[in-house]
Image 1 (cartoon, one colour):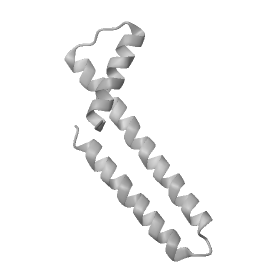
Image 2 (cartoon, helix red, strand yellow):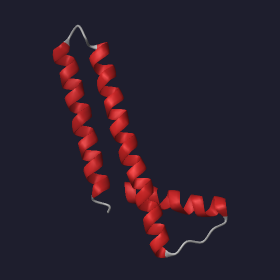
Image 3 (cartoon, rainbow, N blue to C red):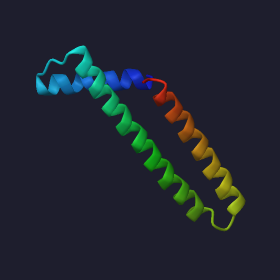
Length: 86
């Protein structure tokens, strides 16, 4: 499931939970809010993962840097995908 589908599903689930009906414009605004929250969560997770990799691999800093780089690349790809949804 792609990010747009997830955001739309989240909006639908919220509407059902609240017994609410939203206009198309309102759905779009709520979907963008959800996307922004996902982006922020990804950024925070990447920071925590990078710190964990550095701590766990402190004896092998080359490995820590490789792991950190991979985390950063994955984060940037996810953010690019999310940004493409707007």
